[in-house]
Structures are given as structure tokens and as C-alpha cells.
Length: 98
Image 1 (cartoon, helix red, strand yellow):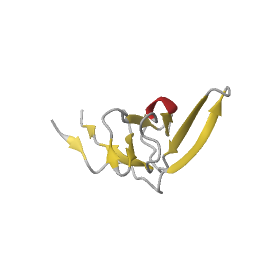
Image 2: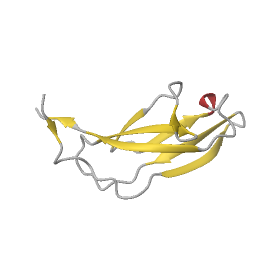
Image 3: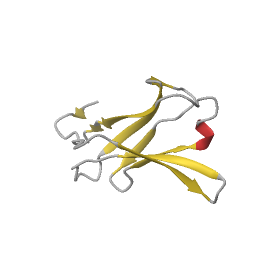
């Protein structure tokens, strides 16, 4: 399998962590907005949320594309993780050459 490294999308700035957003007075969520200058519709990014600089297997990574550059951290993933520093880890995904 070949992967295209030369066509990797460029992340133009640090991801922006937004929130909390209150939904119907019953739920909260946070967002991570990705900033890129990518124009290729096939560009993909993986966002993982870190707690105290560590990945948590209980919080799934999200794969974003150009039509949706916002990852969401729902409150259900905050249980047992309060009082921890939350950060987003962002990486681009190489695409297969066809």
C-alpha cells in the first residue's frame, strides 16, 4: 500500500478549544476547532482529547474532514476525569494512493 505524504493537509494554526456550551440546560460539551488551508476534499484530521497530557482509551478519537472541522467532547466523557487538564491532540491522516 502506498500513502501520499506530499499531499498532507497543512494545519495552519493551533486548534481552538471552545466551551463549555450548554444544551437545553441539561448537557454541556466542548469543541475543538481545526484550522487548515487544505482544499483537497479527501483531507482528514484525527482529534484526540488528552487528560493531564495522556490519552484515555475511554474517550474515542474523532476523524474530521473539510465539511466538518469541529470535534466535540461530550459531558459523558468527563465523568471521572474532572480536575484534569484537557487538551486536544491533532494530526492529519495520510490518504491512500489509488
